[in-house]
Length: 605
Image (cartoon, rainbow, N blue to C red; front, side):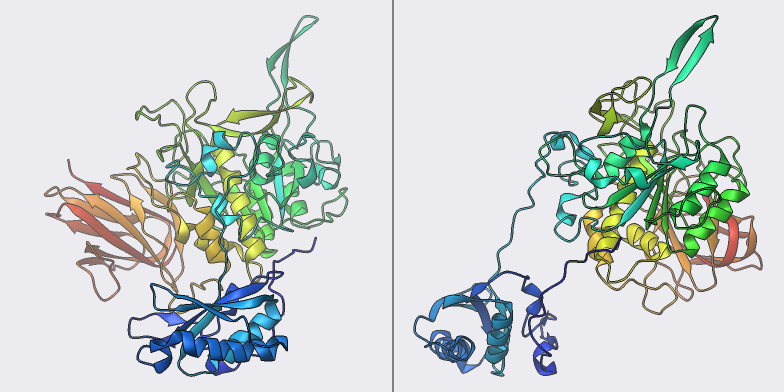
């Protein structure tokens, strides 16, 4: 499927370098003299803004000069007399507004502005453009989807609507490897149902027949667990049809979902899941048809704490996805445990690869998923720790799902599918598709397809700081969809090049290990710890293989040359001991070439 990028009309041929180059001012501002970037394909323009340089005669008598200059340009562009060119007013910023007798198309507007800017006294010229309010979509239950709203509306929201004017996921395929997807009017236009594949039954089609569990007692069967329609809920968060007057909205409403069934009433096997990953990215799987719509993004809201070790077939399959430049987003798990634990333990998929994006969860107030609005900690909740890359909406998860949880598409059937419906669910299964949808938006606007490492970096760089102190670490922050999409529109930063800044600092919690960490000798990672005054503080790196170094500074970011404390012994075992720490933030720089390393900060009580 060919991606459709929104592009500007070819407005003109080459612009003279003297007109296009930004001009630096004493105040540090940079302007585009002829601001073609504000022109929009299909729009027309009859008002323009011209700013003359400070001290110029034109600046002192703008009405006279503008009427003459614009009148001449108008006559050359339109071929009609200059009558009707009107000076409107002086703006507060010192620029002036001029109105034409008729509107110009994009090419004519470009020509007019270039002619005006030929006067060296012109600082810049641009059209008068209209802005629009970011209207919420016309889906009746949008107000209940707190998880998409701005931080001002909901502290745990992902700031979605402001991202849509830039891109809506056009042409991006997201594989949802899950229970399959049911027919649903809020999904139908965006789900490639017949193009999906059922790896349990090994047959074409991505439909979900249900994953209920029965118990036989003599000749009677009892329904123990009704069908979850889990994949349908996940798919709705990724790409429910939006602004269609029914139901709910999806994060990437113009993306398409490729449904891949690997989970049934007995869960799913590593054989089926590994094959599904390879098939989803366009690889060949024995007995399965060719995937005609290889995914750019995979969402896997699945996993297990038993066995805790990652199966090798997953590592092989994820490596193939990475080789094919596909971003894999996975749920961290809902057991309120460390997503990785020590190396070889933890929660699969989170512990399978450093190249995937592992998503933890937050509630409406920005607390960790599983923590109530009043601070009560439930029996379960979002997994946490050093393998979490960032957080997205999870809900609260206390008792029966409700308004503090995640609303999406579902089905009413207890066994097989019956009527389409909507329901609140909670968990990192719901957090992960928020990120997968955001990746689809990012890929739809990127100048070229982003690599998985670039996607992860952008998501972490643009993540919003947690609005409250967390009881456990959840990565770089909360997903900010608008910020991620805006960053994806730029040429991505390459961590191997000079000038590419570090990832934002990740907070360490007292005695909570971050593991397993990996790095190469070209990179550096930053962490922070909020210390109390007086009690001995130890910052320790240990285990794994390779070499590592610690540099620590109080209230500033350390470098290899500027620091307050350091530990640079051979190997990975490093200790920084601060006998009398100040109350405040200690910043930690971890560098070197290492794998499976554990980092922790511990302060004496």
